Length: 188
Image 1: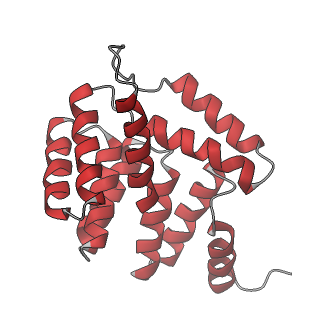
Image 2: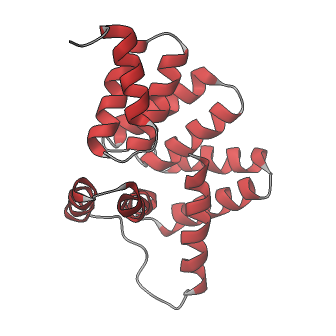
């Protein structure tokens, strides 16, 4: 979750280091994303899955807009520096500039959760999942919030969807088993 900002910083730092005039970063195509999810489904372990998960998250971060990508870089740098107010303003600006960019909503949801604004976090995470129905990380975060607020059937449904997208998502299998046991009882 917060690792996404770290990933964003490292991805964008590498991009900045190689900042020779090139074509602007493109938004990943559906075919590219499909190929990554196919590779993720075939991974044999968490270790094999991790680099594929990182590539998927990197693909999700690409907005297709150099301006938005720059603002996301600055928001990540602000968060890394502890300037959460600045990061919040930048992310809010991004959601206004490009309201269909799911990752801005995801980051906004993470920041709302960190600020103990659960209602705002849930709204932003739901928006993320609506805009990007394969954003398994946001899905798991939203499920966790639903579980906290007692919507255990809703949480279980989202956890299962997230696990179907990423079979190696750390801790999800355990959460699913625990909720299944609580909601459905012992299986014979």
